[in-house]
Picture: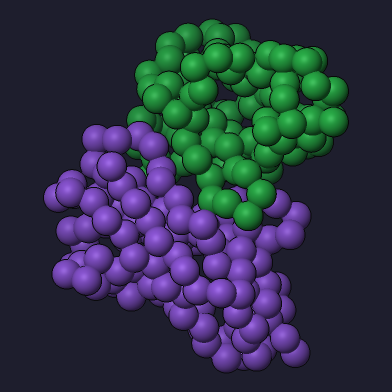
Length: 114
Length: 114
């Protein structure tokens, strides 16, 4: 079974600054994928970034980058140059190879202030 | 190409009534996943279907809940005799292949049981 842990309390971030959201995971599967999703107050789930467990480089997508430390089983999301529209809940998730379900953490609340 | 469409967006049911949640996957997608999000929680996997077949229902409650994905028409998540604890957001995701890597989420149906 996979387990995702997100324990940070809600965060206030100054506009234009960077913010790091922590995510640790636990799995016995050798091959897996890690995901981050954004859920704004309107409720939809928006895919942000994906990291495969065998990927040699950390994933990046625009202002989003994933700090993947396999030995520590962590997959922290870094949002650079925060914008007001980044205010949302952020969920870390993982999927083991050969398994079609995503396991989600409880989320991190981010509020960007001007 | 329209995204994953869920309806209704909001549904209110009295205890004991039936709730029917619909999900139309993205065009060409034959794999559908249902997740439930309780307040202040991440999403929890419920069921994975491929046209006319239930592939994995390990996350579905044993009673009152059922899901189908007929050859024609949307996928339906059906909850019979709803109770207050069923109040949650229900998300549908679809993918072209049987891998969650490419799964796209709908906007969710928020069920409130009164």
